[in-house]
Image (cartoon, rainbow, N blue to C red):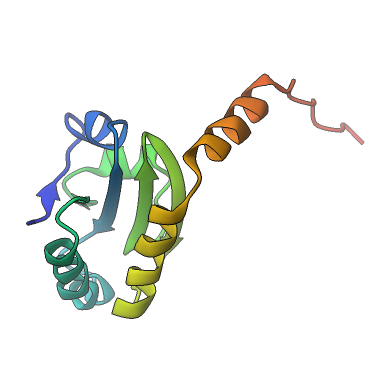
Length: 129
């Protein structure tokens, strides 16, 4: 499956859907991004059941800012609408394959329970001292 270009208009509906979504934040001027691109594209061909999205941080600066992107390339992984992985830096092929393998193996019922527990616990105010 080919990668899909994500924009501010399509990002949220894409990552909040069911299944696994990988997102590569990149820019045309970025050497490591260009080195990572064939690895990412190859993984998309090998994993047709996963959505592989790309965000051009130059064209989508608001989206990159909203997602807290400070270095590129940055890879984010979502499963069933929950962010489960984020890392800056180009990954070698075997490392990307391992991220995909670990994402597939996640117990999403447990992850959803953890998210619910975090959202239910009252936020502690910062210690003024």
